[in-house]
Length: 312
Image (cartoon, rainbow, N blue to C red; front, side):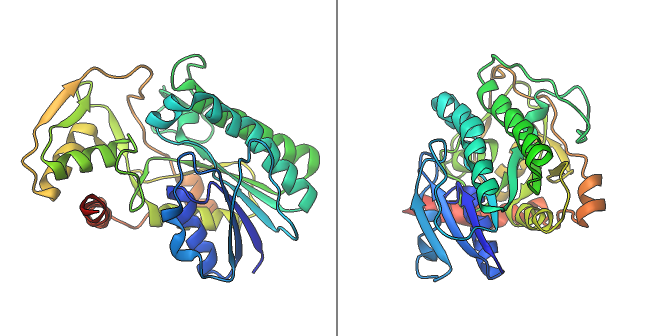
């Protein structure tokens, strides 16, 4: 079915994508320097003859022997706690890593899919966010290292498509959650779940009325795979358009974990988006895709995973 490379394949999303590709009988080479990824996410794949792992920093080079049919570029720190700790590696993998991955796609005559992000919209002035919206990003703020790295990655991806005729795709991924998220990931789902399961106060920033939308990882990966199969080059939003406030989400977590936790309020971090909701009309029309998993169903599976991880 073809030989694929997944950069960042030991991370949360990359490992789920790798599993999907293997189920579809693709050969998969995972490249990851493990700065935020973990071998635990892929160790169960070690006996699969279609699977190969190479510890490699794609910001330095993307080196894969033999045939390559498609490259999925998922390498990047993806949570605020990570890209605030690793600001320069975040910028490098978005710029140099993307350049190297596109260069490899050019040499190998392979297709290319960029895992971009809803953060390219910044703190949006348009709601919900359509792919035609150019964004509202602070390039010198603390979150700018991630936001601008992904915006540059989209620009160079389109440049390679236009200049070198690389068959590229761009997935703008909105908040995604599920098993294999790190307990100390720093994003809202693992934060709230870890706190609730320990009986600690849930930390809500600002007044809690800022909104988010959450897509279960299985749905997201189906969207990625559908985009991979389409000859479509403009960005496509992939996320769940069901929107709720951070406060509503915190209350849902407390109820579903049967926790005694209370809610504690802190100041809103700099440049934190006030709203986040994807317009997925393009994904519905082009890919025939929309998420199927309800929030409660996805959270049940994620809570089970977090309970198991916390017992270890």
